[in-house]
Image 1 (cartoon, rainbow, N blue to C red):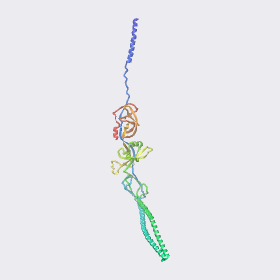
Image 2 (cartoon, rainbow, N blue to C red; image 1 turned 120 degrees about the vertical axis):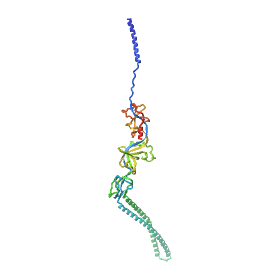
Image 3 (tube, rainbow, N blue to C red; image 1 turned 90 degrees about the vertical axis):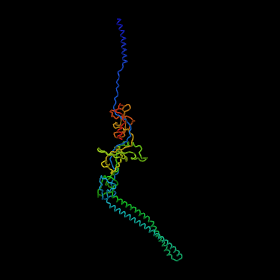
Image 4 (cartoon, helix red, strand yellow; image 1 turned 135 degrees about the horizontal axis):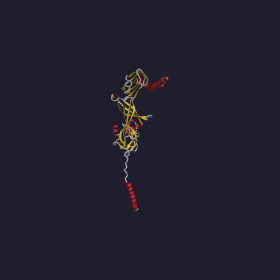
Length: 446
């Protein structure tokens, strides 16, 4: 019994030691290593964003039309007695060419009548001059005679006082004096009227001279000559046809200056206007399109050929198209048909459909490849290699590049890869070394 009791006494301390050992093992036992899971990142291509000096340009389309359009409108009527053989649609005619001649007989008769009227009035004026001399001479003679009669009257008055003559003889001398005085008065009246009659004849002579000039002018207008070098666009007259004044007989277009009326959107026009800092030559004067410094180019293009002409901005339209919300910009191109190289460059002709490129001044723009645009947003990579979505406004597009406006800084990294879906803050990793944004494309565009 004592032996059994001694074994029980050893059992409890052994159990206690085992429990303490187990607790210590559990407390000091190390945890198994945890495997960290990395966040998935998107492989992207990026370029460095920077500003580039570029000429803003916009493209539009329009049709060619001549600046000078002339209508052959006769100012006199009659029968056409001559028509130039080359007065036909498409023909080129030099300046001063006699196009039409109208029967001049009626106008020659009117000119002869006007010349006769003028010469008759000139003869009357010459007669008036002689009449004036005669009247002046007669007045001098009658004045001297009046003085003689007056002297005779005084002498007879003296004789009458001495009763050497009768009273009737004295009265007769007085009557002679009054008659002589009347003659002088009549001559003075005629002389006073002479200037008025002369002025009337001179006015009539001026009227006759004007009538003669008009008759000569109408006679000259029976021959119609071309005022400039041009191409015939329309003909509505034949030989022996009777024409009336202001009847459209032909239309001729000038060839030296051609115009293209291109339609630009308001946004494109504002893009060009933003490149103009201080227009040259305004100086508080009315604005002129020529002073804006814009330039242009006209291009005729097809699948087989392409021809270009330098152009200058002539004017900007005064109204906005209510349907398309566009403004017309007129470009002018100068050309010389005499220097045309056949087979190398065609001339600009009326109705030709061409494209117009209008260029502004050199400015600094944020230029990015077009494939980097995603609607009105662009993808950027921040310093933590996280995706940022930025709102942008496209100013213009050119040669695969787009000028954009937004909250940018130099050396930002532009993401070119199209990410689907694009979530702001998602992790990115670079596919290739960072390059400058669109450097090669920018050089090609310039």
